[in-house]
Length: 370
Image 1 (cartoon, one colour):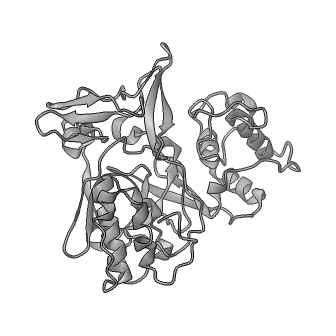
Image 2 (cartoon, rainbow, N blue to C red):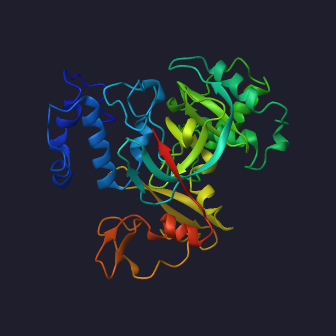
Image 3 (cartoon, rainbow, N blue to C red):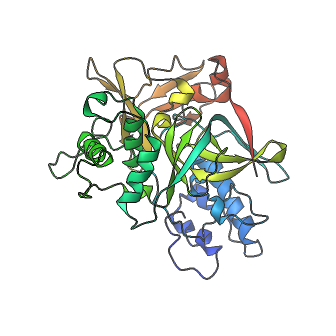
């Protein structure tokens, strides 16, 4: 539905019903065409069925506060409104976890997650087709006061480095499988070109190309100096959150009574690999993303000493009692978990439930979305 917004449709409810033939029969059977229901009732129903069947909250990435209206929950996307932004790439902000949600009778969606940080500064990026000079000025504002000389940027932990990774949406041949080609600039060459522009060493050369995903978004910094891309509607004070079962960090706006509005999805390089949930990878380990045949991003991990690639996250311990892994018949880098007593099988890691994470000292909270 997120990818068919540009299609013409007389009745907005048919944005759901017209796609039923493309769904898995088990999912299609759960949605019965009913034109006596309002557009909101139809969309809310399909969102809840989607959450139940996929066990994810990735649908929140399709939400936009700009599209919201009175009496329309912010956690229900307007599938009939075309977004002005390109999709962000998948992160694995909550690991391979399952969503833990509940919808109360008042329409509040209670989702388990964690408030990571607060937005401290918002710098609007240009619209599609805008000038690269506007992007350069935004970066210059973020890295103001830093020494940008070549000798000061041999490492990878600087604000400038993080800013570059966000602008190129984490384009890095060391973290992704990229076809070797002299025509494709690598991350270091892009970074050095941007540094030269900031230093005005080559101010007339604007051949630097940024990822289309940055247009119509906002470059943000947080109270803990996270740098990321957020929706245009983001404001200072909005919360950067990780939700179980949601690959992308979600921006939430605090309201009275402990409730939140969904502002939209964000991209934060420092949150891409569940670091704020599980901590950093041990020394000599590196994340290597894999994308399965359905387009979903999965984590794999490379041991830099042995060069062995594994699907086991080195930050996680043994499986809970009764659980084991079984080989996946189509993807060697995807885990399938099986519970011996109940016969339940799932792709979501049973070590990443709120109950199991609490045993590891990781406290999550219930976030009430309206």
